[in-house]
Length: 467
Ligand code: SAM
Ligand code: SF4
Image (cartoon, rainbow, N blue to C red):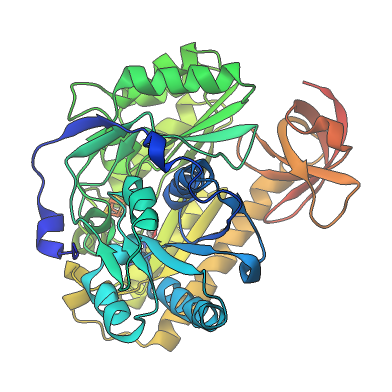
């Protein structure tokens, strides 16, 4: 048994590249059995679930969306805010009930929550029926843990890792767009954030392995890759590389669309901006979280930039990258945030006129410095600030979308619209969702679409021709 420990999670020492392959004698051991996988949280978790799925399917499991017929249920959890925990605990109730009436039913908890000692403690004391808890650093142990049969709960969670995983297999959700992990972990330690503890130190993958993965995806018909990391700008600092060089090498593979998330404003260099502007296959879309418009709060958050520095970077991007769309993340109700701090946040949203923003109420995470800060603002006040912020954010999203009305834009078509079977949906180069009057034959293609209606969160359009 290995239990998580936040002190070990803080350690930032050596690293090591490892290559993973499933043992021959594990393959197809569960032939014909079924798995149900549910993913909570960010793109990183979505991509980890693609690795979990690859392991389960190599073991012979078949996917099911009906939990009642599953033999193994995997919940890939998120720890970023408290409400994510409530959802998982709620869902476990249903799993417990199913397990009572099913003698071949295992419950696995994976993802960031299992890296939190207080969560693991609750599961060990109150949810003994959960079979396996596995951490973010050792997904590769899942086959071994499923194969060994235990009569008790197994907790295999490591709080840090010196491993950089190369050559991981993924059972990807899409045949058109793919996530590509370029680095693991985060060393920024923003005071509110649990990620540096749940995901470990920053570890960059080798540039050659990443470029080979992109070439392989391109050769297999993929049109778009999204380079993934908690702070992609920091890519390479541990291996003598830079993100701008990686971006350029990926652009030269000729894959049609390249995106990346997430960028911390602190070390976004001019070189990166110039490379984005130089290559047509690097999409003109940047997610640039600001978190707050108040310098006092930014300092308490340990964000390492002032609003003036952020604005300078923002304006440089707008000036250098033609037609760039910029979105952001904002937290309201950080401990000590006053009405005047909040008004500074509203002010910066008005100055930046963002294409969109993910907005959150501060959620204290045990073990982080902000969880210990004095917080006198009521939840009611925080909710009212969130609502006021969302009104301003939506106004500008809508304003930006209206600019596209009657214009013809390139859209990568991803699938059938869920609401209307006569429509398909896709994303513009600037990452705007478009519902298109058009048939299934357009899926996987980049097409020209004339925008006929614009709302805050999506656009409607008519198919014109292949782009
Ligand atoms: N690495 C990214 C960055 O630096 O912007 C963020 C990754 S985090 C998964 C996504 C967003 O969740 C953050 O940008 C932040 O706005 C929000 N977030 C993180 N911790 C939070 C907390 N304790 N309470 C509320 N929102 C939080
Ligand atoms: Fe969390 Fe900050 Fe790291 Fe982003 S950069 S993952 S917000 S600690």
